[in-house]
Image 1 (cartoon, helix red, strand yellow):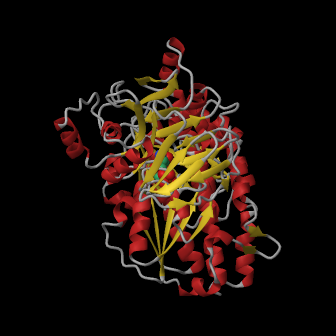
Image 2 (cartoon, helix red, strand yellow):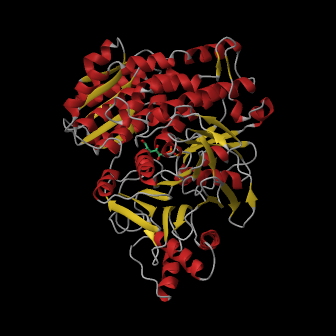
Length: 613
Ligand code: M6R
């Protein structure tokens, strides 16, 4: 769960690496470093803390040259200090590595190397990689072969980039398993390497994705891809549609704020090319879904982590309601331990913004092992979850940088709704009038989201009254129950306020004991089929002295008369209401965290893609 950038070409690698790391800082921000080949010597600059510290360090003691590699870290082995920051040099100081992943057999390898007299200068597992490479070079191999030998020795999942002062014309990189991607960006007389596309978007949109157990030797003019066993690969060159500007903060204070406000556009893009409003039909061509297959499906397992899992919960309700196919939602980290009952008539549908979440990928692997068909809903183009699926839906939201997921939550809600309609249509399980009405409702969504966003100032005012709370309960029912979970997750992850999402109907079975004047309660009470039940929930919370913040439909005087604060949303067809009700909760969480002066985009202990189990 770290960010990696590499450059080889005629330009100075240092600013290219620093800029690239800036765009990857969301992947990890405990420490950062770079290594550049300057006058035949590898110069390393690295320190604990955020990238700004590395930038200062480079200003204090400049370094320039090419090739170069850089890294921003989310610590797994060893504390986040300067000693453990990447890059790691070997004992000869002629080879250097950056790494994403965990060397699972590192204790064993370190003991073997120590017995040979190797001195370790960090507590990281990564350092074993560079010492092993040096060991193989000492036995007569060149960098490529020494790296290959090392890649075959280490266990676990990895993205690795290496360079050697003695072979300055190349960078060697590899991807092993699902520790995150390795992307090679193709330039003119220069090439780039990164763990994630945004790092290199300003230089090129032509990219090669390494598959698991592939390595590449990258020079200024060539990219040679092979399996770890030495079989040459003709890699596919992908053209990435995202542009560099969409990965910039622009006029906004934080990426999260920008991404919340981008939702009118991202929801419009989500519909683009998929909805035929005249015919009242949905097209999802990358899913490879035929009427025959649609009719055969007996069960769909939705699997995902965090915010994406809450989207999956809404998806379960939608698919069951519209397409009448039984669904189950299983958290990615539990899927493979639950011994799921699946066969060739079951679909495993993974949802992931990054497409690189280790637990979600492990769930997909479990599905594959059991012979099921794999689908995914993914944002990051070319990511593992997209590539290993038999069919996919691309979220079409553009890069999401803020660690707290926002636009990559509302897009899959719409994708799942479209999927449900398409499945119902292909199975012949929906009459034309209903189908047309469901499809027509989609047209409303971007504008409805825009109406909520226009209430930003009101929501910020409410956030001021809540800025010092210590706990918060979020309650919802039916299709808005997952939104209670998601609202609470948004608040806790960026403001560090303890927040719990709960099914409102479960309150009376215990949690109601928590409610007093110190416990604000956010109640999702839009005009949906559970509206009356939520009204009685609000009354119960008020009766116990709780402060109620209600999400309510514009014009709902009853809720207004009961609640202390109202987050207004426009009237929305109930099956699409989560897309609209979640937005004020994203805005509320954002404003509370920003008012508290917290680092909204890079909350403590978190990273954007969780590529470790
Ligand atoms: O990239 P993914 O969608 O697979 O990520 C899943 C979770 O790690 C992610 O949604 C996480 O919960 C976010 N920090 C939520 O805002």
